Length: 145
Image (cartoon, rainbow, N blue to C red; front, side):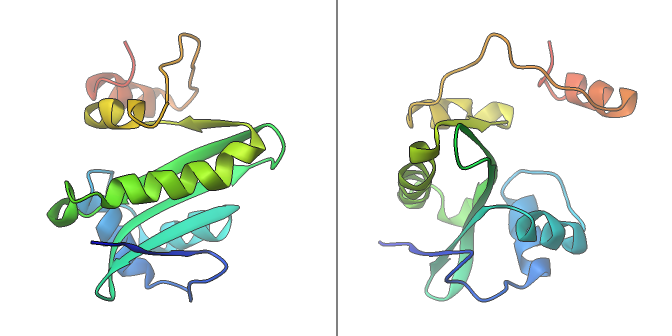
């Protein structure tokens, strides 16, 4: 099966509630649809994957278009995982972003092995700054040792 992939340039504005729901169903935190709209609108790159007209995959990236891009919110609907849609999405992302240098991603713990299949490597010097509350939550979730 082929995923119909549209980009920020080729996709009409998505239904932000549906997109926020997809992101949550995909294992990321629940998000306010208005903030999802803000994040995607302000991202340099966005991908929207459709199967039979239904939005089932997404990703977005911010980039300096020179040395580095930050990939975020990579999601395939759990009902459609294991069918190669994630591979199609990641191949398109790599083709788009690698000409602009390194791609960084902040992965949920159970997807690290998935990203390794697409030539992502764990960093020994990756760091994060956030509020004390957020750092505590990240520690509890296994993101910070």
